[in-house]
Image: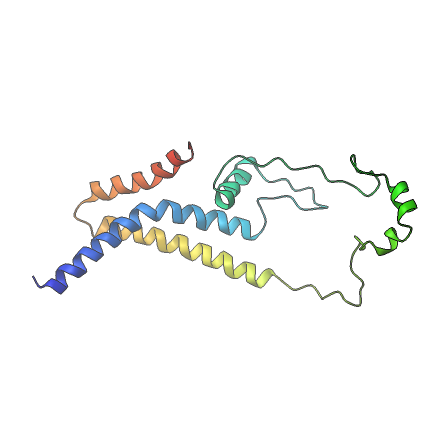
Length: 171
């Protein structure tokens, strides 16, 4: 066997085992990323939709590498005064033009506003990418079992690819 042939055989073996080990993570990121493309993991303003807890947890794991949801600060409305600092009345006495100089929090003027873009075509493209990544990963797993002479080793590596990330969640 020539050195070039041995070199390629070693790289094919490394590719096989790394691909099988990373397959569960690839499937996880492809599926959760596809769901996040359509914002199914979060609520939006003015909507009554609330995502399922499992989906919000998986999205948090995808984005922040943790399943602990952050504590969100309550939003301060314009009607309530801030708890600390001088009151609005005292600011108005000190700086009479403070309200006029403050930037508006409302929607931008219609003159400078850009027209909304249609994001659906890009979302559909990324959904197709996620679906293709899942299909490619699953066909790669099929080929790993079909053409490998060591299916027990392939199964062991696939199981390790499932268990290692779950164990890392404990840290």
